[in-house]
Length: 325
Image (cartoon, rainbow, N blue to C red; front, side, top):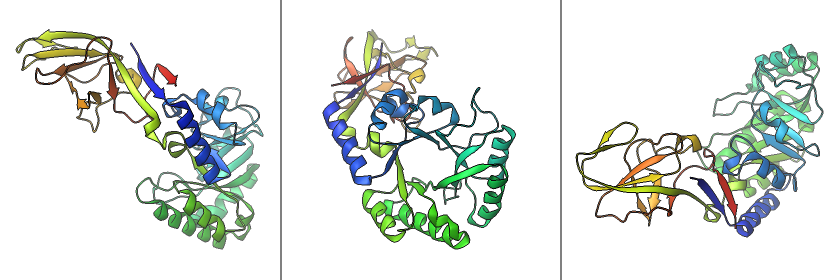
């Protein structure tokens, strides 16, 4: 049984190359589940066109090859990986005095990005607190590599670019020396990025990209699962982990994908499985490596050996096989 990601290799590579070229000075993001491809697979592509590769946490740094530098997007926290010493190839993120203290307590010294808080309000320092934070970094022997902003997903690329511009301008006003350091930003398109670079000529403005880079053209990608078993059932019978009562005659369809693959209902209610452009109802919530579906007699049921399409965000799933065609 498999959850399989099918990739049209030539078209996917064209998209990745085009996106990297349009942005210029791109920092590819390779984190989490590797956007469905796996981190090790994407790193091999990223290192062909980037000197910096962004990862999610300090525990993902090991995936980055020695010829590249790892930019860790999430503050490290109190517990660093074993044998994680100061390393010139690693750039950590600091967004508060607490983040700086964690690194000092771990005796870590090296380069850091200073994250400035955006309207997403996740983590990052307010502009009015930056001077205090920079003084602490100097005291702790942490060298600032640059600045970082992460706008929210909500809104347009222009909205994000306007917020980024406001933050850069406010930081320049509060800290004149900031103009010598690069800004790492995200969630702007190529045209908005070009406008920001034109406005802030004293800065190197580099864009981080993950979802748009790797998954920006979904026509090149298809997620499927195997049908392992089908069985005719009668109304009133029961089936499944939860001994669910069946209300109508129909067909049970057992699919080889479940929660262990990261497969969940769409919008917390709808089945993610489709066959012949029709949604197949879940008999019950998926469990580990298996999902049980129920097909009424008026709908076409898949057969053993068929593939059903799986509607899931690729940022969440763990395919058993990635098939490059």
